[in-house]
Length: 287
Image (cartoon, rainbow, N blue to C red; front, side, top):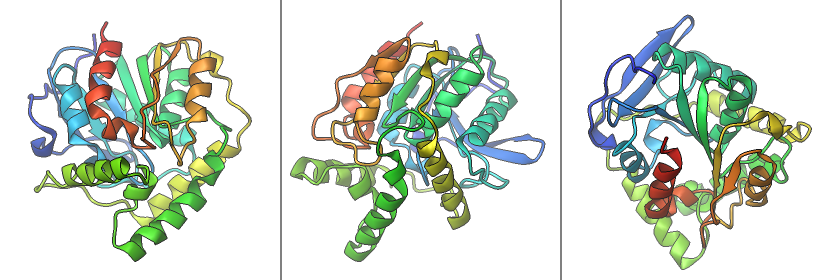
């Protein structure tokens, strides 16, 4: 069993203090919460996201029974260094961070771009990763992933003109239910009032977009290298990483399992349906 560098105290995500851990060349900022015992669950974030973009209902729900760690990768938010422009380099940095905390066995929850990173880590470091949850993500070369940059720019401009958060368009459907879920999610992200993270810089955002574009143009991934149990989840109407990628992942992974796609939900399906996702994730992560 892995032993954390310091035992986290159970608390809510909105009051969990920021911590830092350093390796040569970079200091990673992170938050830890949940019980001290058990295999840690490392959360890998989506495009442009920092610590405060994780839904507190998801983090608190998981941390009720699991040690949970969220972090900013190199150059993102309050972490130091320059953001890499490849998914593979981001994966290497994530491994550095995990080992700097003293962990030798972890579970991974990767959302969107974080799911790309999780796939690389699972394939390259099989002894480090026990189980994976891949949410709103897809394999290298997956259909529609090359549209992320154009879609992000288009919906960001639309949001600015409408004085709304881009995630309302990028993460949720345009139905009445989707709009309600978006507003509730965005309100939850504001619950933390103190010691909030820094927003991502424009240069880091551009580096992430370049990494995603390169991932989308790679030859179809050889997923047979990933032998760990994998739970694949998504909304049925994901525009960012089309939902067909989730079905493809589950079918091609040797131990892939597809959770029924969440209805009237898009890229932020695990946030919109946190009441379904959290119990299912905890069940999957049981030893």
